[in-house]
Image (cartoon, rainbow, N blue to C red; front, side, top):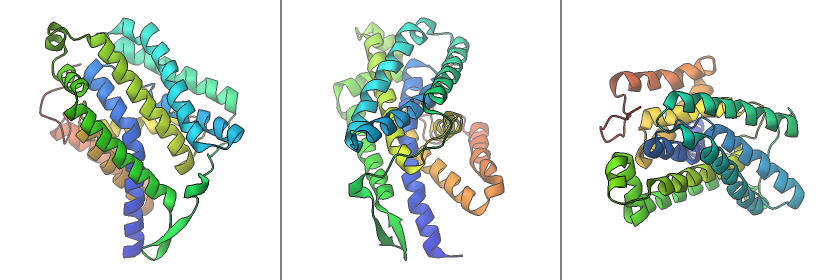
Length: 291
């Protein structure tokens, strides 16, 4: 067993987990606050990837690609939320069916517009190099992903734990009825959280477009990973999203490396165990999530 190879897999797992965190953190908070199982979240990630690819091809700017995705995708997400999902609050079954409909609709639309050829966003010039790590050359971009994931995790933690709006979000997750009774405009809070979550998914799509590329029906492989993160980590909390992402990144990366024929088993069997023995997630506060 090559220890250098294991260490490289470990670093790669952390980079992958950082990318998953950008998707799962928004997904988890949206469900925790709004009780919306937003299955369109994965296609927002996919939209971000293709918007980023288009902007990079047109301008050559990776930064502009991130900005464009962070602006355009939340606008689309807001339209879906305000005109469709918001009208179905409290009807979770209808929400799931509607989200699935939008998932298929946007996926087919992206297929028609961009075609079925797998693509990849070019690595930004400043990060298109590698450095010696554990006896091998390791892409700097993956270390950059780890840094971005850590920065966003820290920023979200500070916002949620140390600011007034974060206090309101936590209050809304714990008890939305009491929060509303205290005079908080919970609908406005819903919109802010939804926009923030969608923006994270869109930026994650641009960053992931360099790391794992993009291909038709990609959202259907991303969505199970996001679900695995929030099931393992726990719904409605950033700690669960962060550590759940790292765990899923480790399970998926090592499973594909050492047990490629059982890669899905190594990922989803631990998820099944969590559901069986700690259904609220490994890092939940212990409060059951209401449907």
